[in-house]
Image (cartoon, rainbow, N blue to C red):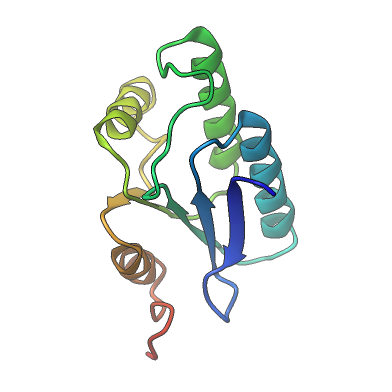
Amino acid sequence: MSNIELYWDNDQQTVMLCTFAKGWTWAEMFETLDTIKKVTDQRDYEIGAIVDVSRGISVPGGSVFSADTREKAKKMLAMGADGKGPIAIVGAGGMIKAVARGFEMLDRTALQDVYFVDTLNAARRALAERMQTAPAGETA
């Protein structure tokens, strides 16, 4: 069983929910990103994503400052930058936000459509507002 789970978050299939559990691996993450890319390539409309790291997340290999981690993070951002929709990140700690700010300093547009929120409902509201749709579980 993977430590990264991927589901549709709404019946309209406009938002995907990706839940990380402790112990995830880079291989699992790249496999998940590849799945997301295959799904989004098959659709001619924008798809948003909720990335839920509220169950606790750590970086495989231990250090966010290692060269290997930086390379894998760059690869992850490059995969997401190609026609991505908005992303809401739930439960990101200070370390994840610090890494995100570091990427923003390198490329101001890299995270322009990324929203850091505290709850799943806040993520749904942020994406609904950005994509101008009703949040999951609510009607317009």
